[in-house]
Image 1 (cartoon, rainbow, N blue to C red):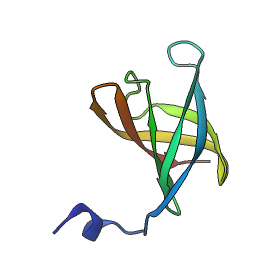
Image 2: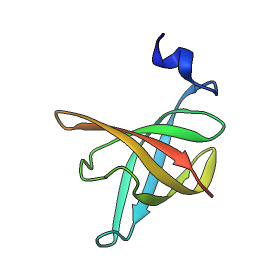
Image 3: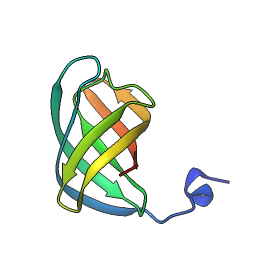
Length: 88
C-alpha cells in the first residue's frame, strides 16, 4: 500500500507563493512555494530547514490563511519540503 492509498483526503497540485511566520524561538518570517493542498492541510517548499515537527506557524497563501502545525519535513540539499496540518 502506498502513502497515497492511505490518505483520507485527496491532494490537489497547485503552485503559488506562501508566507509563514512563527515566534519560536524568535520571530521569523519565511517565504516559500505552495506545492499541493487538501481539505485539512498543505505541502510547501522553502529554504528554512530548522522547522520542527509540532511547531505552530501562521500562514498565508492564495487559498487560505490561518495557523498550521508542522507534521513532517524532508530536507534535500538546500530544498526543504514541509507538510502542514491546518489547525485554525
